[in-house]
Length: 304
Image 1 (cartoon, rainbow, N blue to C red):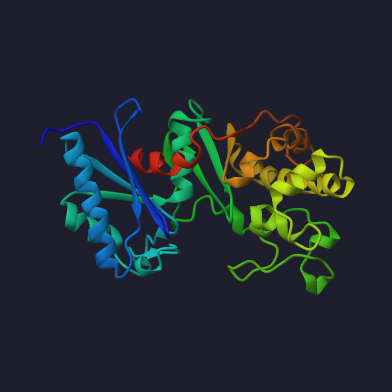
Image 2 (cartoon, rainbow, N blue to C red; image 1 turned 180 degrees about the horizontal axis):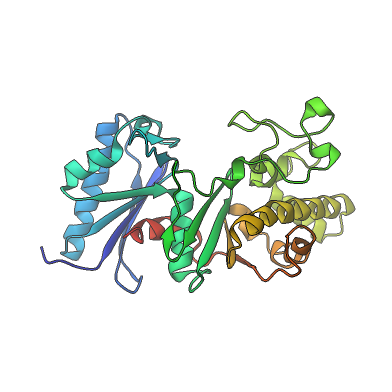
């Protein structure tokens, strides 16, 4: 096959796996979505390799391969950890795929891929430092500096969601101290994820049964309790992102996930940031993603 600058990105999810081929300008030349193979790690890697070979056959070129997945490769052991495709956890997935495809394969956390996609040709295009936060069922984030993902020494760069909510109010403290903070799946109480994920926003309103989109709709219809609650969410968001600005000082913060669809946040959160940021002004852009659900798979392709 002739060499090419085209890139293959694969977004490996728990139920669905999507693949795209991007040309040098980021245009999609080929796309396929399949059910994620079940069973052993070997069977899953066979399925991923077959998908990659179908992509090459479709565009008649040998491709670079980048893969995004929940979890990450441990720099210490080389094994995958934290993936919702649980059969892959504890396995040398990178090596297994490289053997099957006879080339180097790059694998990154799905939030890192999201941030990279938005940094290359999305909402953070042209920015030197981009912080991409996915606020969905959980909370994940990635950092891109100078067009490169900052994975970090331990491979956990951007794991902002598993830090405690900053400057907590009394009712935001752990329940043992009289507050409402819930225990995160990571085992610690009061993680940002438990407050700002879609499920976290839902959990702390009323009896916890009202979906976040419905809370927004109720506030828009004049429901005082819903409006008051969303103002608290916005203040929590400002506190949480202020710590990122204080540490990284990014040019832009890009939101993804279901919570990113709540339009009011882009107008209401930025004016709250100066209260918490250690600067006399705040110029960091706070914006919605451009590529939506495709950011992960596009970012996987841009790993090359």
